[in-house]
Image (cartoon, rainbow, N blue to C red):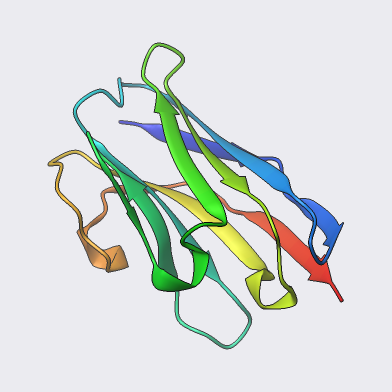
Length: 121
């Protein structure tokens, strides 16, 4: 069974940058779909980005965020630049063994505990 641990969240001013990391253990992430979701208070969990052999981004983060993976380190990253107050949320790493791009949480097999990102104006 895979375990996911996110890190790298914090408080940043608008326009700033953060890099989130998701370290996996228990099995290899090779061949899987890895994704980042976020959830703001009172809102549904929404996909931010996903990566297989290619990448997917939700419209609001295109050109600002970059998802990447290092299968040797069993780690996925989310580089976030030009951050906005509306990016404030808890960010969650997700794993899907079967591959493919899926944008709804129910298709993912494992989740991290989340890391908080707060962007001040």
